[in-house]
Image 1 (tube, rainbow, N blue to C red):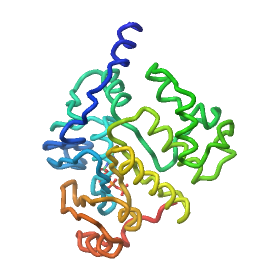
Image 2 (tube, rainbow, N blue to C red):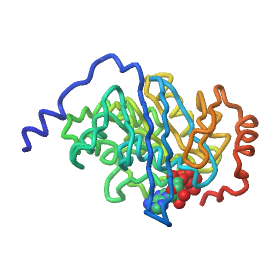
Image 3 (cartoon, rainbow, N blue to C red):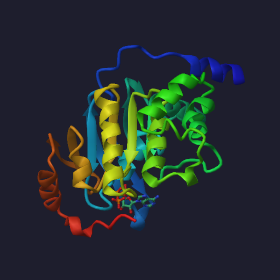
Length: 267
Ligand SMILES: Nc1ncnc2c1ncn2[C@@H]1O[C@H](COP(=O)(O)OP(=O)(O)OP(=O)(O)O)[C@@H](O)[C@H]1O
C-alpha cells in the first residue's frame, strides 16, 4: 500500500501545462433536500487559461465558496465535470481525491489554517511531507525569503502577525509547485497593507511562476489585482470582467441583484 502510494506521488507531470488550467462543465451542487433544498451551484460551466489570476465575486450566498470547494476537490459536486490541469477529477475514493489535490492544487484560506505547534518552516513543508515528496531545504528557504519570512523560519504562528501568517500559507501553497492555487477570501482578515502584500504575492505566483490563481473575494480592491473577475448570482455565472478596476467591479456588484451592502462585513 505504502509502496503504491509512493510510486504514484513521485509521478512527474508533463513539463507543458494543459491548454486549460481549470475547466468546469455543468457543475451543480444542492444542499439539503425537498423543501429545504438550496441550489448553491446551478450548472456552472467555465474555463480558465494557465497563468491567469481570476477573482470570483458575487453577493453573499451566491455560491462562491461552493464553487471553489468543488473546483478544488474539497467538496464533490452532485453532477458535472471538474478538470484541473487536464486531469478530470473523478468520483473516486476520498484517498484518490486527496492524492489528486496534493499533486495539482494549492490552497490559501481566510484563517490561514496553519498548525500552531509547527514552526514556519515546518508548516511550509507540510504538503511535501504529506505527499511523501522530497524536501529541498534550500528551496524552502528561498520560497520563505521570497514572501519576506527568510528570518522567521523557526518562529511559530502565534509569534507572527496576521499578514505574516498568510504569507506562510502562501509559501505552503507554492511549495508543491501546483498548477492551480485556490484562495478563499485570503485578505478577509488582514489590514490594508498586509492585504496588498498578499495580493502582490498571488500576482507574482501568476506572472513570475506561471501558476493559475482563483480567488474568492468580497473586496473590489482585492479583485482589481486579478486579470479578470467572474461574477456569480444565485449559483450561476452572471458575467465576466477583464482588466477589472475597483470602481468598475463595485459598480457591477451593485447591479447583481443583491446590494453590496447586504454582504456581511469581514471579521
Ligand atoms: N453545508 C451547507 N449546508 C447547507 N447549505 C449550504 C451549505 N454550504 C452552503 N450552503 C448554502 O449554499 C448557498 C451558497 O453558499 P456559499 O457559501 O457557496 O456562498 P458564498 O457566495 O460563498 O457566500 P458568502 O459570500 O456569504 O461566503 C447559500 O445559500 C448557503 O446557505
